[in-house]
Length: 133
Image (cartoon, rainbow, N blue to C red):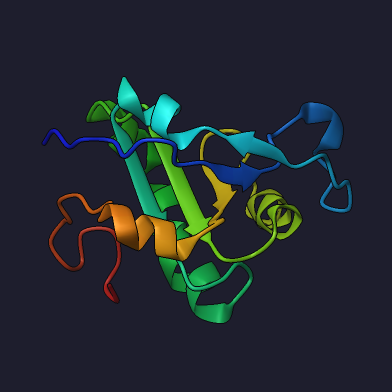
């Protein structure tokens, strides 16, 4: 699949750093230039309602963590999860799940912008990465 990457799409995130690996270490939010990062890479970006929610922590995120090597084997360069939480919460959620920099945990700055750009790709069959799409 090839898809056009929308222009000027950015997210907020706290990049992983070994020195900030403790869940109570905040880090500094930065801009993740999604359009730039995704323009030359194959990316899988999935959205969840919220970090640390029971459904997202138990059903949505774990299949991506468990299947990360298979996803990468299929040529995916970047795996990212998007939610409408702040960057510190997203960072802490990654740390709580033992994820370092293998998955990028980002904050949606503007849901309206994503909808406006119609940033939608091909979706896998239901059940491919979980049963409750």
